[in-house]
Structure formats: structure tokens, C-alpha cells
Image 1 (cartoon, rainbow, N blue to C red):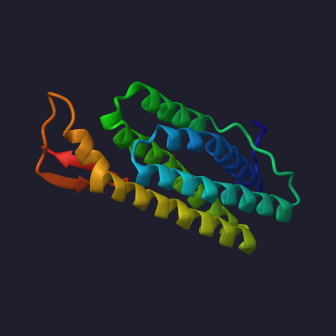
Image 2 (cartoon, one colour):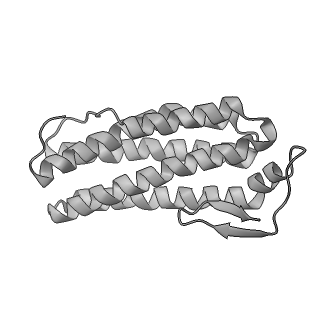
Length: 186
């Protein structure tokens, strides 16, 4: 990485990281959709793929407005999150796979929420109002996707996973973690 000495340089690096992350997701989401057993989860992944393609286009608009070439910088964090999702898809039994895929997808969403939030704040400080608007639009879509995933987890996937296997037990109360995903209180 080049020595970053200004907020503008940092902002461009953040955009490059997000650009690569979104490009990785355009390849990962179809695999996650294929691995999902629930039609609702499959549809959610397919819908988010369309949104992700829009996120790429918005980032390209921002690069153009900045006079920068739309190129990514390898996002190691997203590569790791995608790998985790692939492992869940291949290493879980069908009855718990959807719960695992939702958890993996929420990790991705939380990473993106953090990245877009920081980039939006930096764009504000730099007076890049068009970029602020585009980044805010994407940020809101990422938050909505996270909420939809939480709803899918709470409405079916987590309960189905909890009911599978011989050693499982159902816990009576649901609690929401700080990250928006669900967990069971024992």
C-alpha cells in the first residue's frame, strides 16, 4: 500500500476496497443462493445480487466524479468472509445450512455497513456531496438487507436449525445481539 497522507487519499483507498469487496460478492452471492434450501433465502440472495451490481455502478460513478479509474484493491477481509460462507455451504447439513448462510451473510453486511459508513463520513468531510448521496443510498440498502436476513433467521431458519439433530434443544427466549443477528438465550 502506498503511503497515505491525506483524507482524500484514504477515501480513494476505501472506495477501492469497497469496489473489490462488491466485485467479490457478485461472484459469491449466486453460490450462496444455490446452497440455500429455503426459497425465501434464495430469493433474498438473488435480490441482493441485483443490489450489489447497483453498488458497483454507484462506486464507478464516484470514481468518475473524482477523476479516478474504477479499480479495486484486494479486499482481504471480504475474501475471508466469502471463504467462511463457502465453508458453511459445503460443511453443513441441509437442516442447519440456511441458519449458517444467514450468519455468514450478516457478517458480510456488517463489514459493508462499516465500510460504507466510514466512506460516507469521509466524503462529507471532503465536501463530496454527490459521493455522500450515493454512499448513503448503498449504506441504507446494506442495512435493509441485514434486517431482511434477521427476519429470515428469526422467522424460520434458526428454529429449523435448533430443531435438527439429536443433541439440540430449544431455548425459550430470543435475544438480539448488537449486530442485529439473533441468538438463543438458554
